[in-house]
Image (cartoon, rainbow, N blue to C red; front, side):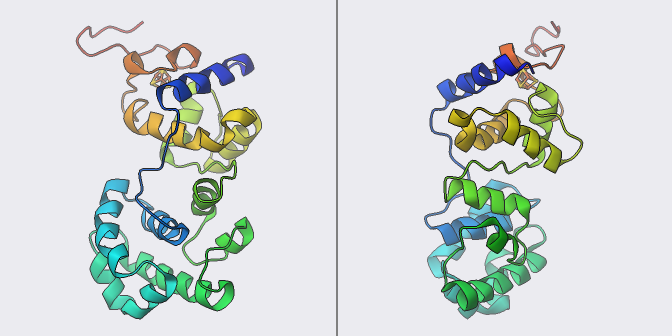
Amino acid sequence: MKKNDIAPFFAALKAANPTPQTELEYTTVFELLTAVLLSAQATDVGVNKATRRLFPAANTPQAILDLGLDGLESYIKTIGLYRSKAKHLMETCRMLVQLHGGTVPRTREELEALPGVGRKTANVVLNVAFGQPTMAVDTHIFRVGNRTGLAPGKNPLEVEKQLLKRVPDEYAVDSHHWLILLGRYVCQARKPRCWECVASKYCDFTPKTLAPATGKKS
Ligand code: SF4
């Protein structure tokens, strides 16, 4: 993607969705951290279904610890990899209580030191909770970054670095949401829905797909 096309690409996404949000449901920073930790290799819909039951029962590190491992597992067992996620969440809650007074720390180093919290999870929390212009590269952003030519890279870290370098400051905080939503609903893995993409004019992918009714490509 040419440098001059990057700002219009994001302007088009912004015009269609001025205030993009995460689809994970949360009301506190700790709830957000918990939801993101549970969301690895799971859908936001599946995580929300579990946390709608979990959070009314326990939405602080101490309350999760008080549930005990078995109690926590009973709330999240519909989520893939729930056993290891439950273990990580319990250990994370223990560290939050012992080292951070029960609050979620605001630095990458402290976040990544928590069990089950990798670079991507830290990036989501720093961005969504603390408004930092971080880029949490998931499978959708990795695909969109490469396919559009916006941020080509062989692995998530390369794509992340390209995005940090290329996304204009005014779009930096919200850009990861726009790219996730674009990838999830329009620029889908098997067949991008270019015919309904608001940013197609600025995307390098060719040939663009047309609506199935025509069966043609341009
Ligand atoms: S035009 Fe097509 S390939 Fe490009 S971002 Fe939109 S949906 Fe994806």
